Length: 159
Image (cartoon, rainbow, N blue to C red):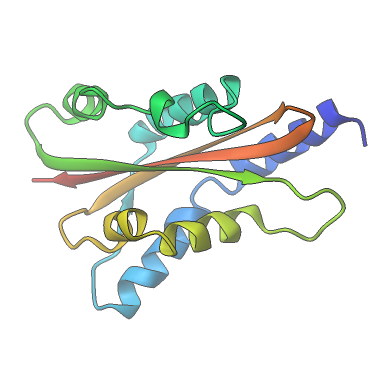
């Protein structure tokens, strides 16, 4: 399969499975006695924009730091205020990248979830009892001759 077609298939797959990562996060939360996160479609646009910005810049590949392309410097606060006004109290985001393994049965959503759960700061967002709402975005790109997929998950505590 040509690289452009592979990326198109991956992007379609990610859009089709757009809330599957939140479902896995909710499985983690319920095993800990925590309420499930509510999926917010309004935040989907914002999470998607973050993921696409990460992919467009090949963030996290080579010498491009992943953290410099996310919603830092007050960006997450602007996003939450835009959508919820003063109806929110705290927010956070998880951003991640996965190298796509050609000709494998790799489950990108599960791999991203397992990567987040293996990282204390990411896990803390997933299982934080204060967050009650979330959304996710996915993007894929070819960087330095390899295919990658990015995820941005936004978490918010609504009042």
